[in-house]
Length: 171
Length: 371
Image (cartoon, rainbow over all chains, first blue to last red):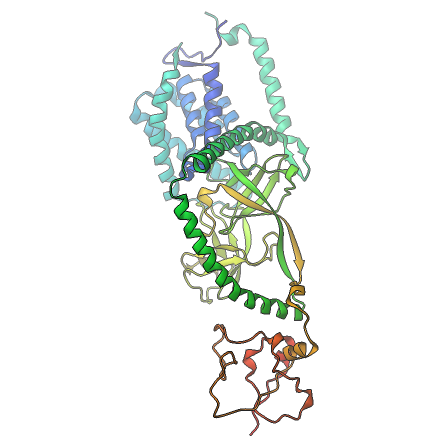
């Protein structure tokens, strides 16, 4: 029996085994919750977002990408005290966008990965900002802060994606 | 080759529909906990993550304990000697402070002053965070089974950390004071200006609602005011980082938290706060004359111009406000003071400043020296 989690795209489409498809997001969520206790600056990173982007651009199936983003986002919401769905919606959009763009761009190049993650992080923050506004909050947008975090996450993404590439399986 | 989804299309669709329904159920239905309600999906997520975190933390502690208590004992003897010396110094200091404390308690008792005391705390270990900058939450390994309830204050010896937000049976969520949704009743220690400490998305709390015409010094301590009914009065919050013009008519005052929120390991949850008057039973009986001496201006002693000042006697001139008066005896135990009811003594009165202010002394002006 073929226990794989795959996409139907014909070109440059990768699949992942079930343990990787489930274990990597769960590990990312766990690390995101646990590591900042000891390494405070780790809060600046958004590992679940990076994992969402990686799976999105690798599978290149929008349905799979948005589903992965939704699941990861809702789980992340549940660990916070904010309304459930905030990160869920944001990561659903990112998963969908990453899958869609992944079909058209060379996503194996570190440079393009860096730029793509940078842009996706900003979009993610903007969606969260908009949702908070819709919920009646008055969020403050800190450009410098968010651009710095985007840079840090993009650098991490280049390293992380290179590591996760080992789990890719060509269809 | 047919894919997995192609071969098990019906089962996959069924699973997807069931998953969507379960997800919808979890996000809508609330489950009741011991105190309040919590969304089911949140309950599941916490139940899935926190056992792992607990396991890691406890293993880490066990290894650290083994290393520091049994293996790595270098310098312990020297440290022990230093600590003994420190204890000796602190004992000497304690004797001096005890006198001051006794005096304060007597005065508080006379004024029927009630104060909030932290009666009971529960020590807890930080096991996790929300993992995002937008939600400054930490998880502790104590829950409703340990007597934790929502809105209890969480502190460290350095200062306040936050309050309990959600309680699960064995874990709890703590909302840090740096979270944008946090608010703490605060007061500036020196200027006694009251405001509200609010968190921000960047993690830098600000003291709000201080009018722009007020004078606030950089480095001034910020303490809890007790007005929020969560944090007992007088706990350290942090220090003023800078003072600048803010929105509307208020100052912009960033505050650096006193507690090390970036490296929290163990915290205390205040589970019981009691209002009580200071206990003066161990101070010995107070004579009626002593009470009168507290409430009324003292009768002056005969002035002896030739005599040199006696050590331990009150100074002749009023000291500056707030100045330490180590020689001044506790007012309740001054045997030489006499009630003024006799009215026969015509010598100069003692300066009233050595007496603590009580309502009676405040309302009664001090006697002027008679020629």
